[in-house]
Length: 307
Image 1 (tube, rainbow, N blue to C red):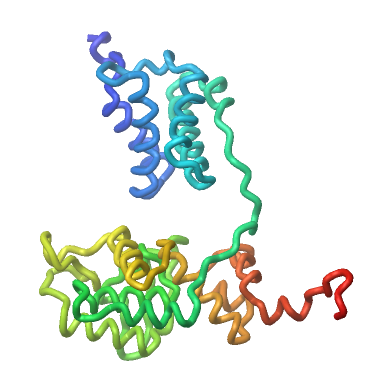
Image 2: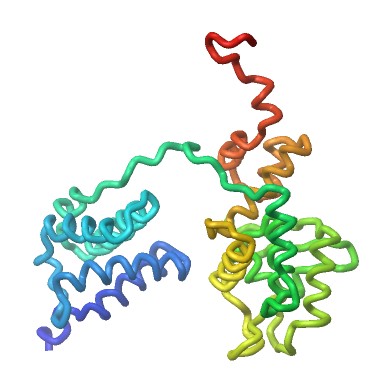
C-alpha cells in the first residue's frame, strides 16, 4: 500500500500539485497559474514525457538547456523573466516538498530590467480618433467593441476590469462606476464620463443579447450570453489596432493614453495615479517621460549650441 501512495506522479499529477500550491499557498490568480504551469510543463516534458516525474533526476544542465531552447524560440526580456519566475516558483514548491533545489535554482538568472527604463507607448490624438472610428457596422459586435475601448480610453480600465464590469457596478442616477474586482483588490468609485456611458447604453439597448448574467459585456456567439474574458477584450483591441495600421497590440496603451492626456492638460502625477488607481505614486513615475511640456522647462541646452 505504501508503494502505491508514494509512487512518482505523472506529469499531469505533478502539475496539479503545483497548481494547488499556487492557489492555496500563494493565492495566485488563474491566469498567472496557467502561464507558470505552461512553462513548467515544457520543462517536465523534456525529461519525463511518457513516464513518472522523478524530481531528483533533474540536473542544472536540464534547466539551463530548457531556458536556452525557450529563448531561441522567442528572445525577449519579458519572456525570459516569465520563464525564470515560473521555474523559481516551481522550485519553491518542490523545496516545500522536501527536495533539494539549491543547485537547480542557481542556474536560473533574470535579465536586467532597469526601473523606468522604457517609454510608455500611448496613442496620439489622431490614432485615438481613427481607433474609435474603426468600429463601424461592418465590424462584428461593433457597439460592444466601441464601448469596451471607451472604457479603456476614457477611464483607464484594464482589460480584466472591463471584462468583469457588471450592470450593478454602474449607478446611472449619479453617474458613477464602482470597481470591486480590481488588480489592487480594493473598491474604487469613479465618475462615468458621458461618452463612455452613452457607448455602454447604446450597446445594452441595441446589441447585447438577452442573458441571465449581470456582466455588462457578454459573448454574442456560443456560448451566447456568457461573460467575456479579459483575453477577449484584448483581442478586440488588437483587432482594432490592426484595422488602423498600428503594429503593436498592447491594450495597455489605452491606459498610457489616459495618462498622456491628463499630463498635457496640466494634470499632476498624483492625478494620474488616482485615475489609473495606482497604489503607489512610484508606479506613475514612468509617465513623467510623456510630460513634454514640463520636460522642456527643465531641459538643459545642448553643449555648443547657440541657446
